Length: 336
Image (cartoon, rainbow, N blue to C red):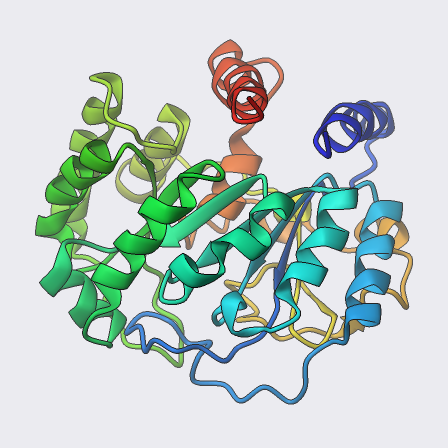
């Protein structure tokens, strides 16, 4: 029941604090390492060498600092998290404190899922299209089959979603991917590729993307298993095509690099360059002294980890139903 205290207790606590205009992150994202066994075209992170990795005791120290900041949700990513031998121990500590999720490329998933499944509430597996498209974009032959086999095995233990990055190379494969998701009974979380300075520039052509986003919203309405909210698609379309910006709240998410440094204001603009050790600063004080206002109209990315939390409102019944009621209901159902 790791979800009970973080989601309910800390949410109420944050809501009380926010009445006075104070800011606090409620989601944390942590890159466990940059090293990866795939070579994705759109990703800058596998191209970086790891200086060193946090020890288990340092990971725990980081998590305790996030608890003090009232963080409720913890997401682990990389690089490839499954390359860490101590991953079960790290996830176990996280699961004691947070609702815990992880993103993996799936290459090692089938063989390792049993050792980590008790410590995860949700799992995202990167799939960018059917076999040829996925393997080309991910840079390693066989990566599609390994990922799909991993998804099928992981589904025996916990809820799983595909995590799909839309690029110029897979625009025509997204509909096939939706049918694949239906056939193996998993959902899909989508985001548009961002052109990082040190990665291949393969963001999709704007007009084709516009038509795809409209179609995806229609597919969600017709019952396709799309994780993104309706508001997500509306925000991207309105911002990028109709000059109606959405208000970004980068303070809702705190990102931590493999060395334990806080990445500010977000990992898109700062490309994961951290400055402050998370356990050496008062996060609440830092969050409420930082000038977040200058980034409210940025709208340069459509990454779900920033856009969805920014859009969420207790005043929007559809979002409460989809994000809170349905989400907790799915979590409880997965326990039986």
